[in-house]
Length: 249
Image (cartoon, rainbow, N blue to C red; front, top):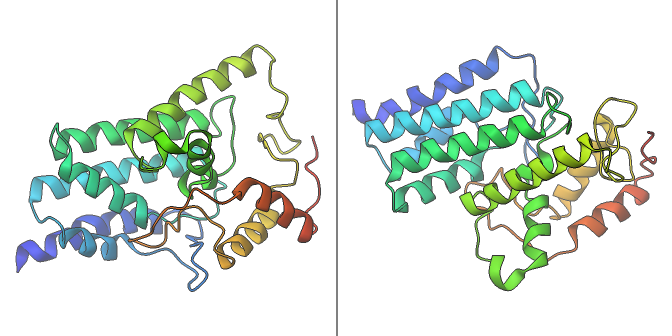
């Protein structure tokens, strides 16, 4: 009985960290307002594995990812983690190198990515939404669907691609070679033509979620990622439909 309780207590620690932050932990789930608690996610994890050392490593990995997001994306709006954690768990349990080494490397890549694209570097993106909810992954798969359609959105292969892309983007910024990633008057970069001020981002993403136009329903533990819809185009069209103003630079 004690072993069954451990996961909840282990993952509840992340809930306690989040409770100390002055953020509203919104979910993009159209049917509820707030994210799934980490204590609840701990129960789902324990259905797959109850080995204590594995659970401790998984908890530490998730904690480092969450803290890095908080530090580098302080204005992020939606904070779902369910599918990402399920993906980590499934990949770890079948990893050739073993579950614990996989989790440690996965955590390192996620932290690096979050720091690279966040508010403390020259890239200065405002939200994690495009990455976490799969817009970047869907766009990547669409370029070579025969090769990429079966690659997980949170696989090391895709994370490595984003790390390379981030380094290239930083180089282009440093050499003054960016056209679609100009700094907005808010101090953040927005590659889109429409405003992504918090109220606009909230309206657009909640509308997309209601219309099932989000590539990964991350709020769903058992989500099935979708890549073969024109997400970018539909996002542009909906921004016009919702009368979201052009981005000011």
